[in-house]
Length: 285
Image 1 (cartoon, helix red, strand yellow):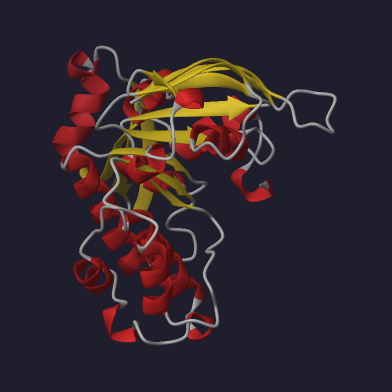
Image 2: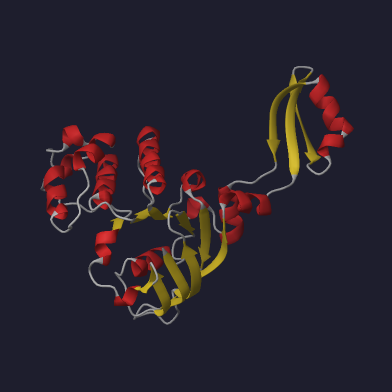
């Protein structure tokens, strides 16, 4: 869907480049996660891919065509949900939607979208009366208005309660299942883990890692098996090397004789990988 080669970009007033030679591709039908600390270049990259920023160096192709040469028909193909919901607050939700619908040739079934996201009954409410979560859901409706082939989602579930976040994630998966492609940035690593086929970590304008969440966990995790069991009324924890565990007599004896409470492989989490790769804690974004 997208191929990016040696992408470089420097803001006019900056001496140092924000993007320092990014190269990556996004396959058609893939959910591609783009992760990194604040200031790493995530938003800049997205703005270039959706043609909000120009004057970059390098080559970007969309469906094999140089995006610099694409006309406004490109915007019929993409849907964008920015992190901060942008709506006309003195208009109702439906008035907002109808305004943006007129910008596109193709239109999605708005009623089904809004019903799925729990907004249909509040469609005639002023957006200023919407909660933050409702505004975020309305943002997603707007991104889907033109039945896009490609979605750009920036922190799509941030501010949503677990039930509504799950609905949104299900809709993203369904979009992919129907052939859609997604570029997503988020600091909620559980979302990235659940959704993404591959993720890229960007640090100081350079990509440090690209792989599937599973492969990254295998690479950065420990090949161990940890179990917890009860002994004399207390919980005891032991760890064993994964290699040759089927012949590890001490491990097998514990399984055979103890009341096992938990059993875990030593794979790491995306949060841990984020911190290892970027050197930045998620709570300091």
